[in-house]
Amino acid sequence: MGTVFPSPLLVGFDMADNSCKLCLVRDIAEKADIYEMVKRTRGMLSKSEAASDELYEERLGVCTQCDSLLAGTCQKCGCYVEIRAAGKSARCPVSKW
Ligand code: SF4
Image 1 (spheres, rainbow, N blue to C red):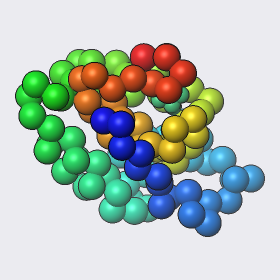
Image 2 (image 1 turned 90 degrees about the vertical axis):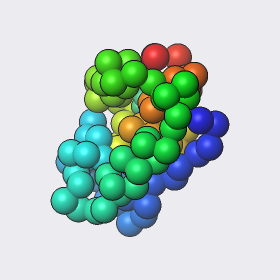
Image 3 (image 1 turned 90 degrees about the horizontal axis):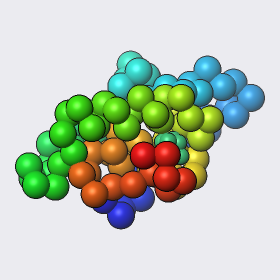
């Protein structure tokens, strides 16, 4: 999961309006069809590559408490956190998980 997935949600995003701060893509899915891509990408991982559902949700719980999360995207690495967290061997860029 070393691939970076820059978020098109941030293109034209008004940084002064931080209403998406601490949101996951699934929370703002009505604004874009990105969540379908997130689910598809997660579904492509084999069982040996994928984080368990429990680990995945635990990681996302950390992200939703992190100041670096903006519109579903980690500002430290540019990834959609819901994709980054999906890989069993994936790591938070600042070691929060
Ligand atoms: S991956 Fe790490 S730095 Fe990025 S939003 Fe999640 S907890 Fe924060």
